[in-house]
Length: 156
Image 1 (cartoon, one colour):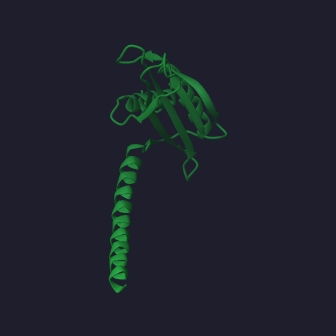
Image 2 (cartoon, rainbow, N blue to C red):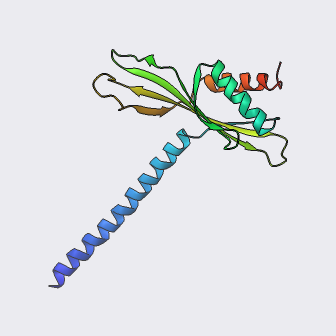
Image 3 (cartoon, helix red, strand yellow):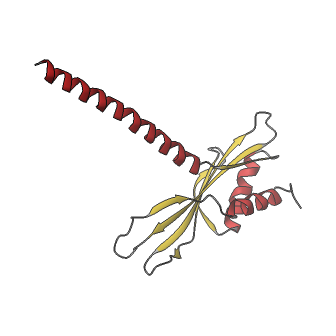
């Protein structure tokens, strides 16, 4: 009887040790994924309402269509036009999400932007089954901030 109890005790100890290593791996993956989805942030010397209007005009100039948001919420969401993907029958779009927050001194606005690529591999047979991938290394962030600052009159 004591041999069975000993074997069960060792089994539970091994199972408990395995859970911790799985937990560590899960935490590492979550940390990696969270780092991929960090926004690009820039502070501009303009009030939030004026910044919102400039964000909306800048997004329109870049070919994005307004989806939702407003100056009171401090949010703006837009989506690009639908383009054909790399394979026949696939489609591609880019979504833009912008968050605006007044700086602590009240003289500026923190502008956070997320860009995600939306790809639907077979839009004719599996409509609505798309994948979203955060865009990390794209010049669209720099173009957006440059045009935004020009529209606000901060850069020539």
